[in-house]
Length: 355
Image 1 (tube, one colour):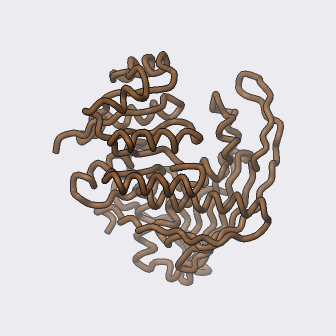
Image 2 (cartoon, helix red, strand yellow):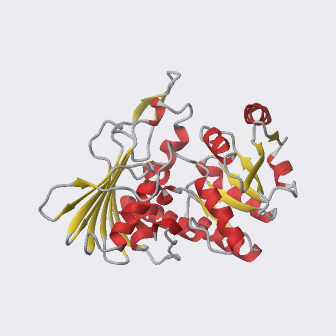
C-alpha cells in the first residue's frame, strides 16, 4: 500500500519521540508539523527533516495530509480534533480524547458522521508483555479473574517537565491513569461503577527554573472500579510518589492463579504467574519486544487496520468511555459517593500474533 501522509499538531515534550518513531514505519510518511508558535514548529521541523507549516490552518488545508496526530495540551485536544475532523482528516489524539464525556461523545459522533477514523492513545495494550498477559488470562491460566490491583505512582512532574502546570491542573487520573484503565477495560469490558477518593498531598511545588506554584487538583487518588464482567479494580494514581516505589504495575488475581505485570507501559515488562498459595515464576513473552517505547505504534495500527478494512484497536469510542471513567472519578471525589456509568464500546481485538 502507499504510505499515508501524516501531519503533527503540537511541538511539546512528547512530539520528538513521536516524530522519530513515525519515520520508521513503511506505511507512514511524516509530512510536517504545526504549532501555535510558528518559530517552535520551524525549529522542530528542521531537527526532524520535515515541513514546518506556518499555522495549524495551513496544515489542515493541505489536501495531501490524510491523518493528523493531535499532540497539543490536554485542554486543546477537543478543539484541535474537531477542527481536523471538519477539515476531512482522520485523527489520532494523545490522551485523553477530551476532558468531559459530553465532548468526547461529540467527537465520536462527528467522526462517524463524516466517515473518518478517530483514534486515541494510549497504545500500550499492544505491547508484547501486555498481549502475553491478556492471552494468559483469555486462555484461563488464572481461572476467573475477580480482583485487580493497578499502580500509577508517577512522581513529581516538575522534576522532569519544563511546564508542569497543565498536568497538575487535569490531575493524575486524566494524565496517566488512562494507561492501566485502557488495558483493563479492553480485557474485561466497560466500567459500570466508580468510587474515588482524592487529596492534595503536596500543594506547594517549585518548577525546574525555581518558580513556586500551588496545585489544587488532587495529586493522590485511589479509585475502585466495578467492570461489566464483575471484575473489581483498585487503582492508585499520584503525582507524588516517585518511580523508586516498589508498588508498580498490575496484579491480576484469579480463582486458580495470579499474574504480575511489572509495567503497564513497557513492552518488555516482566511477567510472573503464581498458582494460588504458590510462588511466582517468570513467564516468557509472546513475540520479541522492541527496545524502548515505540510511540507511533498506535498510529501504525490505525493505518494498517484502515488499509485492511478492519476496526483499529484504539478507537474514539473506547477513549470516550475512558473519559467517562475519568469524569465519574472526579464527580465521585466531589460528591463522596459512587457513580454509575452507562457508556460502552466495542472491545478491541488482540494483535494477530497473540491469538
